[in-house]
Length: 428
Image 1 (cartoon, rainbow, N blue to C red):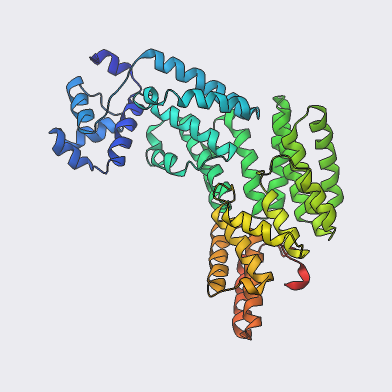
Image 2 (cartoon, one colour):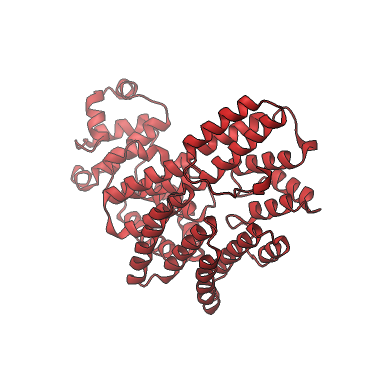
């Protein structure tokens, strides 16, 4: 039995969230639960909000109606504190392999944590791991907590908005990511702010907010180095190199890449070396040195690193490489690919653009869908690319008035008119 004195000592907001989430997942309204338990909906609402302490009998009736069990063992809280702290520290230090081992051990005890007051922390730390490593979508798991965020601790709130921001980044929803990350920053936990800023830089970069991204990145590097977190600082340097790559200041990009490579080789950090190879490949691509671009990609060890598949595809596409067709089929048909649906759509559209034998009645619809996704996410590269493909399509079909309308619409969304997107400038 749970003593009332023990209930009073509980984190009532967490207990309330535990009940509220279970009720929402079961699709039961407050009034329906009140009817099932013969308890007023006002009292249940106050319990969910952590405003009122339930009696043991009331708690038992609510949990029975929701088919819940509550484990209040102090050992569970002690265990969660250990896993939470160590997983977080290893994620912050870029020790993803150690974090993975801890996550696997944590998940092996899932039944205990999911039936305890640690259920929120359990789901948050798992979601943080999967979001930062981009190994699993956690959108559905974390969305329910955003609806009850006001009842959580400040750190829990901040992490929920941070996780959602990282998820948006993974799905190329850059404006939504910026909004979520700024909300996380506004909550104001200094311990987390530097990590959140690193991801906010990425949101700025892909919206072509170059001044904001570089200035924030420099501050973030300084803070990481003050904390002697040199791995994260190097990651931020690669972000600045990507800015220089995008605006075609290749000498400056190479200078940063060489600095990161020297550090990565000294400490055998393959992840950073792979990131450097991706940037070097991009520079060779924009200089039309396609063999060099492929040679750099061939050095990449982790083929699932962000940018690898798409960069290799576009090199084959633009250079009309014989390997294009097999590589395209492999990407499109690979079920476990880390490429998002929007990136696969982009690859399909580009393939049809360059190879008319692949075109069908869905081609125009796919370009329109790509355009909508680009505008929704404020993905500046994709905005330029999708609109230019649409303009070209209408010109091919002698719909010059329509092409002009699309051109005028493009001016509303395009911040900076960089001459390269993902295809040769001369063709757009």
